[in-house]
Image (cartoon, rainbow, N blue to C red; front, side, top):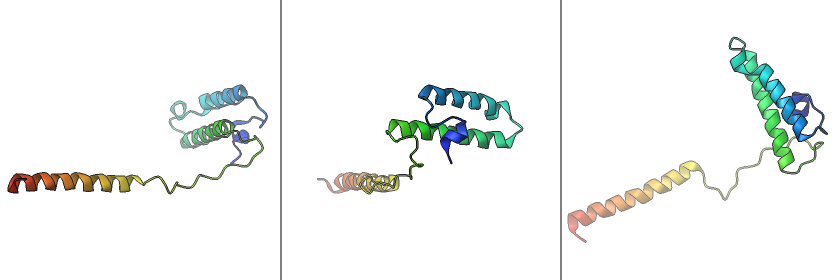
Amino acid sequence: MNPYRELGVSPRATDREVSQAYKRLAKRHHPDLHPDDASAAERMGRINQAYGLIRTMRRDGQRASSPQPAPAPASPDRPKPMAVAAVLAAVVTFFLVRLLLEALFGG
C-alpha cells in the first residue's frame, strides 16, 4: 500500500496538507455516516492506516520516497505477556504456600 496514494497527496506534501487530506477523507468515508455501506468501514481503516504510516515515517525521519517499513520483529529481550503472568503466578503461589506452612507448623 502506498500511503500517499491512499490519501491522495504527494510524498512531498507538507504535514498540514497530509492532515487536511486525512480529515477530508475521514469526513467523507466515516462508517457512522454510511451505516448501510460495509465498504465504508474498510475504506476508513485503509485511510487510518495510511495516515498513521505517514506520521510514523515522518516522525522516525524516513524519507518520503523510502519503501514501506517492514514490521519490527519482536524484541527477544522483552518478555511475552503470558510469561510475565506465569512468573507472577508462581511468585504469588510461593508466598501463599509459605504463609500456609508457617500458619500450620509455626515459623
